[in-house]
Structure formats: C-alpha cells, structure tokens
Image: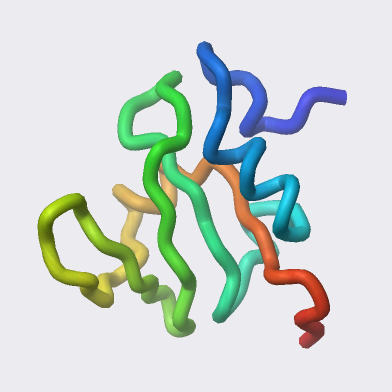
Length: 91
C-alpha cells in the first residue's frame, strides 16, 4: 500500500515530519483543528500547510506575509496532499 501523498517525486520531508508527530488521516475526513498539507504544483512535494477552522475555511501564512483565514476553495482542495490530527484530539 502506498498512500496518495507518497506518489510525488522527491523526498516528502514535510509529510514525513508531520507523520512523526501527528496522526495521519484521509484528507476527506479532515475537520476543524486538523492540519492539511498541500502541493502547490502537480507532482511537486508538499511544501505548504494550513489548519482547518471550519465551514470550508483554513488559516495559513505565506512566507513574508501575515497569517490569514481563507476559503478552502477548489484551487486549494485539488492540491491537498495529506491531512493530520493532533494526538489525543477526539471528536
């Protein structure tokens, strides 16, 4: 079994680090408080993260810019690479 996030070329250092400290879950099951990792280009390594805050929204930051809350629209949803939950968090 190879998870979807493992298929990109290159070493997935961000996903590997998240896997060591967080609980992996399917991206479609991620909810408020969960961390979602993104590939900013098809086939690229995951290099961006956001935290879901509910109602199709996430908080994230671009390098050198403020932290913002944005809509998790189609552009972002297509680029989801992996999702994680903090250990000990239950619904």
